[in-house]
Length: 142
Image (tube, rainbow, N blue to C red; front, top):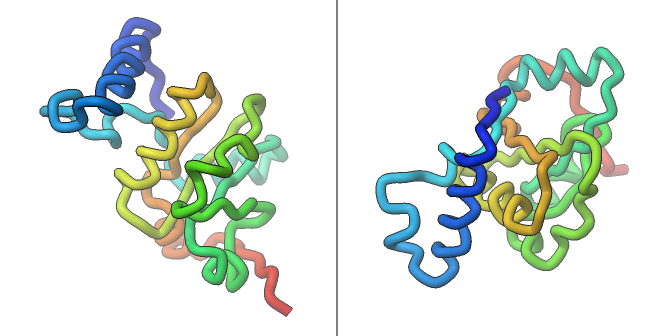
């Protein structure tokens, strides 16, 4: 996992606020992916196996989530995230993942940081990285 200094985080939050009004200027030369804390699938699996309490948020469409997802994950699809983000706990470790482009997940993490969250990580390789390693999945379909 990566960590950033307080000044870097403060600068980032200023850029996020600027992006709301001047998106082309605020992130010129920067990407959302560069501004979020990431966690590799291998590290996440180790933490889960060690019994760490981690809240997994699956950003894929609901029908994909029902088919299969990381064990214990909660579903908040990308398209619903802006109105449902308050369902994400502000304490404990939260990991967002998807089967989409990294910038899409990073944008949701940035939205949470702009709302005061300091506990959010993005699984960089997302659902495909988890699947590629053969890690366990669960289903909610009957």
